[in-house]
Amino acid sequence: MGVEGCLSAPTESFVKIFLNNIKVLFFVLIFAFFYGAGSIFILAWNATVVAAAIGIFVRNSLSSVAASLGFSSVSAYFSSYSLGLLRYLTHGWLEILAYFIAALAGGIISVAVARHTFNSRGFRKVLLDSVDLVALSLGALFLAAIVEVFVTPMLFG
Image (cartoon, rainbow, N blue to C red; front, side, top):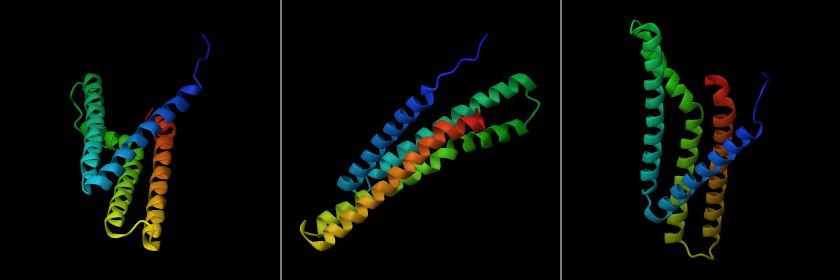
């Protein structure tokens, strides 16, 4: 028996997760631009995905605790729930922050398009500020993907 591993697996996971999060960010930006509060639907959907993942983790953790302890420990319920929250919110708060920032940027661009002419100095300033917000949200998503792929498995392996 030897030691085996796959060095490229975390990198592939990172790219897959980061690109998926960029797709969600794009939809948040587009919905905020065209529908204003439409990005709330994407944010709510993302919140339900996180809640479902936490629920599945808690259910699986409780079933393993119940099997090993024979239903004798009520405190295992609370520790499983807290562990589930920590596991997904370790990186999840950064993703949610990035989506909110993108929603703000999309809304700001939408209002700028409605109120300014495209050649005005004010429109360019607002557009540059919105691009800064999108860049900030991309940075938060990048950091969230790093935490999700490399930090969370070390903490909750």
